[in-house]
Image 1: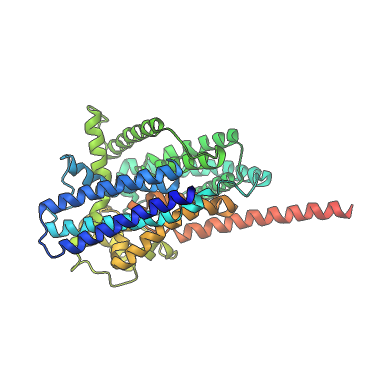
Image 2: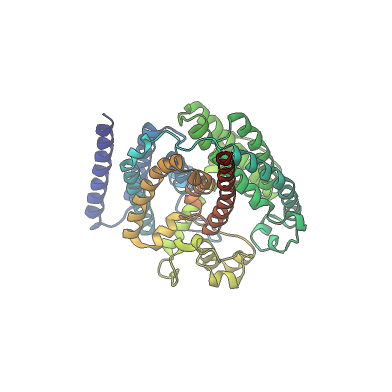
Length: 466
């Protein structure tokens, strides 16, 4: 019965792909009109709803793939859907310019979004077989629980001190100090060096130890108190990505059930929108005034949907914005690429899409610390249509496979604190996680686990000698 259900959904997806492919070929011989653009918008909405519906039916709301689809809609599709309702013109290029993308550019943008979504969801549907792996194959580790807690608590004072120093500087210099290199010139107290990295690595190890619910909540409260100080610097993702990750972790590993009511999802969603807008106004130094909840929601989706401009600008400026180096998608894997502020020297030597595109659009804005951001969809565009379709399929399939191996391997669970936020934030960031961050985390993990193994062997050896 399960196989029949999977086959039915895959069949439906293949039919949708063939219909859309036939439509693209048929309309290739006609001029692009406003009516056709509107049709594509409705088709994207229908395909997105189908993708969400079938994914939730298969795995529940708090599955990594469903969360990915949610952020995909928020960061890339929201302006298009607002336009359907007559609330926002999605083709308006609002970043450092004031013009509208021509019809042909809108057609290429929408077509690319539709094809990548279709093949991403096809990969996810074919990867459904990995969802049957619900059993967690590694047990509770008292040693990792104990020592990760000790290391975490030791890192708390230093991390808190560093956050306060950074917050004080940002409040005096402004939010753009995060990006213009100002923070890199801070001289921290010697005893705080490495505290933030140690705190996060220890917390990841704590989660990988499979702690009890009670201890999970205690340590997580301390963790979030620190994150609240960090998020006051202006980066909302510093708070919301850990929240999303821990919601997934709780339902997957502690409750072992990814089902959650739609009522709770909506409650948390509206609460998140309210908090996010308050943080924006705080960052900009505005008075926090919320007059109309409806206007607040529209403003939220319009602001978050700005990542669509990354693809829009790349398509529009394709003859001028040419990548003459390594593919942008490889940027997170260049672990020796150290960021020390938005400078001419850095942008000339990096392969970061966000930095390159911002500098191309407005060198002055870039050097002042501003940015258009990045998106995996822009990195896919850089690889061409065939590369984008192949990677889209592998993305959907890979996310489903991740749900299996994260339950089979403690080290993957340990890295999940990096991998899950990377997947969730991909529509607004890069496709790959930071290789540098993964290497540092793995070194920490294997140092601790090697001590654990040697200690265990020593105890066993002593017992046998007796």
